[in-house]
Amino acid sequence: MQIAIVGGGIGDLTAALTLLQRGHEVSVYEQTETLGEIGAGLQLSANGSCILINLGLSDRLNPVICEAACKEVRVWSTGATRKLFDLGADPRNRFGAPYWFFQRGDLHRVLREAVIAERTDAIHMGKQAVRMGQTDNGIEVQFEQGDHAEAEILIGADGVHSVIRGELFGSPKAHFMGLIACRGLIDMEHLPEEMRRPVGLNWVGPCGHVVTYPLGNGSILNFVGIVEDKEWRDESWSTKGAYSDLAARLPDWHDHIHTMIKNITQPFKWALVGRDPLPRWSGGRATLLGDACHPSLPFLAQGANMALEDAVVLARCLDLLEADAVSALELYQDLRLARTNKVVLGSLINAHRFHNPILADAATAEDYLEHEWEPEKVKLRYDWLFEYDATTIPLVVSAA
Ligand SMILES: Cc1cc2nc3c(=O)[nH]c(=O)nc-3n(C[C@H](O)[C@H](O)[C@H](O)COP(=O)(O)OP(=O)(O)OC[C@H]3O[C@@H](n4cnc5c(N)ncnc54)[C@H](O)[C@@H]3O)c2cc1C
Image (cartoon, rainbow, N blue to C red; front, side, top):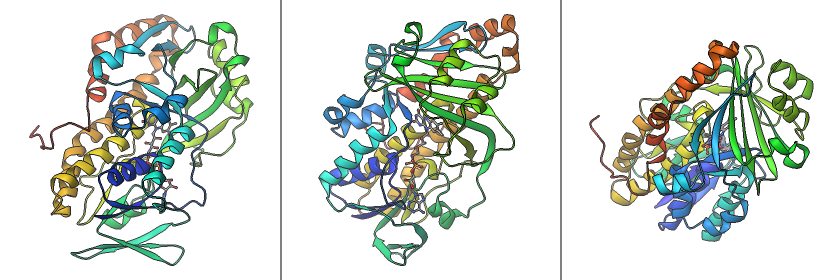
């Protein structure tokens, strides 16, 4: 089948690779002139890593993966700590695949090289989709540059501001979530010994939280601080931030937080936007994938994982119903809607869990930590995410 994919992000390239491996003729159209990713970290849990392993990427990924011993939750002021869950061997034993931390650029590069190895001219740069149209037999996408492409199927994987979503279902503006992310990378050598632990940390506070985890061979620490801000709305992932601004947004936080801020190589900041979940994603010969159809706050660390899952389920639906592409795209949407909506909602609930006024007082904060991150509750919040294997789930829509 001739398949056009609009967007060259992590989810989009995973879709391209899995479809190419199944013998389809895939073309990727990316608006930017240079393909790449920002210098930031990304976590992939077992439900995402199993997909990359299944695509045969383990050898290419091994040099750029980082695995940590566990994840912990810490109180913003006192540093009181509670284990969130074990990493290392535990996810392999319980869910059949590892929990990985990456530099986004490394994962993007590995996917890009694998796509090009399947089809040298699969990726077309500098192609900004502006419109699409379809007939019973085919679909056409038009580019800002004046040319167009034709295919049998179109996948709109063009992120939270998706043009293809707008063409299919209209495009109310994405809404600002009142939160900004301040991120940066830290050279682990610049931190005191006690802070160089191979763990992922989630510091929770009354009106903000900070996530850190190791990258590379453990020599880099990824820092993301999420703070509430009703005014600032710049969504660019490459707007530079200032150390003093970041420090002032987290006043009175634990010394470790301020030591990390001082050692960030270059702080960046961007506003988090969201959209209401869609009731459907597929229309005739076109469908959506990843943030284009279910953008979520990053508080379950599942956005990219969901895009990877979408890619594989979509490819399997096309295998199953190869003679009827329109039904295949409907089946894909029906199989994915409930799960991705649950992620959008769960991420929003985590915003309230991580930013809670009860954390202001050190005494109530520790009780809150014990109560909210009690092991059975953690299992309920995460196991359903991690145990899903998109490569094997039955392609049957459940009635529930
Ligand atoms: C602070 C933060 C931390 C995160 N951490 C995690 C994490 O740890 N784990 C996780 O799973 N997820 C995480 N996410 C979410 C994850 O980054 C996204 O869900 C994921 O990148 C979505 O991938 P995508 O391929 O759907 O979209 P994108 O990565 O947004 O890619 C879309 C691509 O489409 C291109 N494009 C856009 N419009 C057009 C057009 N009109 N024509 C052609 N091309 C176009 C863009 O240039 C881009 O290359 C995080 C997000 C944030 C904000």
